Image (cartoon, rainbow, N blue to C red; front, side):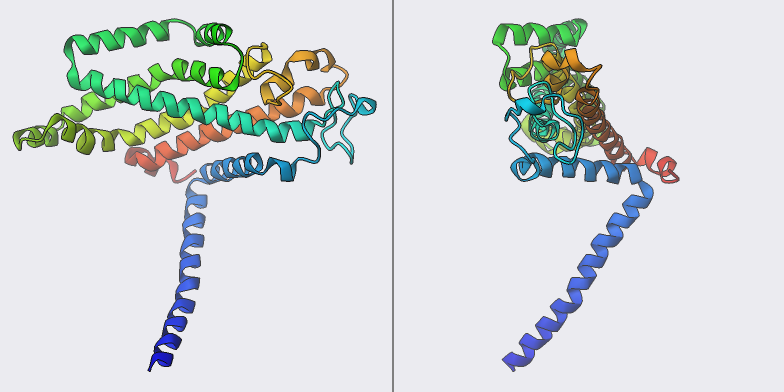
Length: 306
């Protein structure tokens, strides 16, 4: 009896396995047909993440290893993307630089999203003087050019990965706050909020159970788009010498420093880091647009034909 049961279970499992894989395959195909650029952006970001995590396995050389005799060597079978003025392998530095770019791109957006969401919800929910005070502070931050704020903070705090993250978080926080505050105001005017208040729901319960779940979609969309902006900000700061200090490789400082003096004779020093930044930022921007299309029912039908 037990043997028969085990055999039937194994048969059921064997029949269920192809069904599971076929559903996953069908799911991917369906979204590939509807959102090909979105699926491509997800695959691109996943590939970059894998490369960043397993950088030692993908990089052919140590990113700070100097090969003096191969200084400014062009792309070849030994150095696929050439070397810089110190003879360091450009491909290895790009691979290790992806770690910093993804870290500095995602970490400040997480920080600014958490803080901006808290301030935006409190501002809209409390209203009155508290709303005016918080929003005037955000207006003051938005009135100052973002690059000026970032340059000032990094110059005062010092050039390091953590200080760059703090500077980018401060710059992007007002944008998250504006979106959250506007959506929260819209949610608070809905009839189900009045119904919850009439049933005696506390302020905490209304915020946690009714407000926060309804602001997730716009926050995710804005956050995904801001990751690309954060990567560009880090590259700009590093290019100006106020980002991640060398010899730690980043895509930004690969475009700056002494490499700038050799762009004419060694164009690969500018082309490959620039392409890495462009493709990554484009991938996150497309991901943000795709998430918006998936979560906003008003745009689904208009985008399916693309």
